[in-house]
Length: 364
Ligand code: SAH
Ligand code: SF4
Image (cartoon, rainbow, N blue to C red; front, side, top):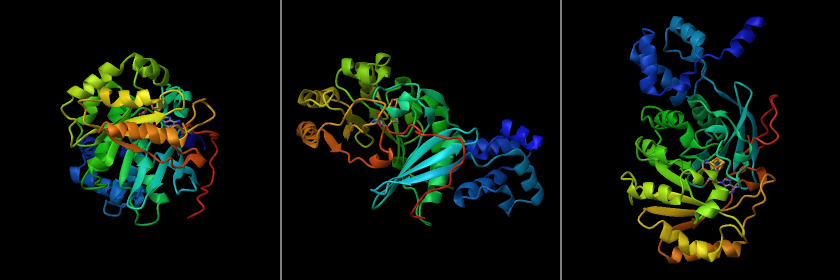
């Protein structure tokens, strides 16, 4: 019907674009009392109910009115791929037919969800599959929040997401307003009630946005370093030409919101012959002096769009040992989900199609 098409082309505002304060303000402008916003939010997040008509403690007339004005779902599950190690890549479809990916990493005592913040990424890091896609658009708040809501549906009943890492597709600090509102929704004690310290935001070094991010509360900051010289970092992370190492590390050194209790997680992707020498391993602790931090070493996850390869496990171990010897805290991360292209930097919505595909999660 023509009317349906008109509706599709003019999307309605989404309730999940707003945290509690913002939704209360919206409702107030529509002459609705604040507690109605609270009721709606508790259906959406407390009970995971998206169907406004099913919100039975709202008067029928109000339900009709809200259902005529607002959308509640921003994403639908396209496909769930399960890795041999249990990692699940959730392929999600936006209302405008784009495809994004989230990665769910079940571990013994926690379930971590890796969320995307942009479709593609404008920063074009030379080793990253997302960077090779170019920039399509920022995700909306509802699209960020719905990644969590859809992932909860993939988990066995009763299981919760305990940790969120903003390490999927895109650069979170280039979509900061949406990322902050999503964090407000995740951490609102009335609804999803996630502890801020279970949330980590990773940036490739958008220096002016670091302080505004940290002001939201005691979340964790991860910084993608990947090199110990500007020459190499310019090649790997082109943003380094705008914010070179001394500017980036100087800003972190001066940042009062970073402390031993709230250290920076430095991500360092090891690439054979590029940044994996013992000289690099010795330079790294000197470079980070004065910044409370930990180093996470990640062997490069290879993919067809870049020629970088991971070093041998002996080289990775030797690099980690050298950094460790300096007294800096360091971990060498296992690769999860590599077999389904769900590991760090492999997300590129490869093979994306715009028709809907059935869920293929074999483990129900
Ligand atoms: N844009 C943000 C967050 C997303 S990327 C950032 O760059 O920090 C999450 C992490 O994966 C970053 O540290 C990124 O540099 C790293 N990464 C990207 N491609 C990778 C690859 N192919 N192998 C291993 N790590 C990769
Ligand atoms: Fe963007 Fe991060 Fe990939 Fe760089 S590593 S292109 S900043 S998503």
